[in-house]
Image (cartoon, rainbow, N blue to C red; front, side, top):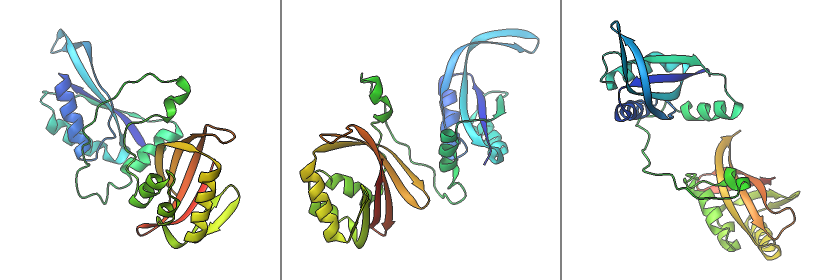
Length: 241
């Protein structure tokens, strides 16, 4: 899928936020910053100087016309200035945009608005990529797995289907009993904490990435957990650095 970076004018910051919220509710924009600052225009043969606002966002090429129509509906300006620039972006940004707009054809309701604010804390620069206060919205069986992963191997085994398979450190553990034994052994051998910071869908698996810190060799380290789900249970799990 091809994308554009979009620039939309607004006379004030509240107007810009209103336009962006409207486009997000229609699933026509990814979202982005709303900038305000001094500006000058040649307007009807006069130079006009005023504070002005711009919305910067992204949209798929095939939604450009619909975005224009909806932005103009939401705008109160005589001319809502909208421009598009073909997007050349990093693979990670393109992947994020693909995920964001993948369900547009089947979505039947507006996206949910999360009421949140940024929380500023000072941390070592090496930890910055691994900090997030936003919920990853994990599927229930996976959320139950990480909740139980605080020492309760029986609770962890109950997160899995009867014949589930776990692959970790070159070993395969099949069935709830073997999975319980695997987790009991790991918990006895090492003590650790995990900070989850990413969740994505890849090749039919839910991939959760976390930062593991503990008394094991190589700590701290990042691990990826590849979950295969079957109903409300985990059917497979592979853990890869």
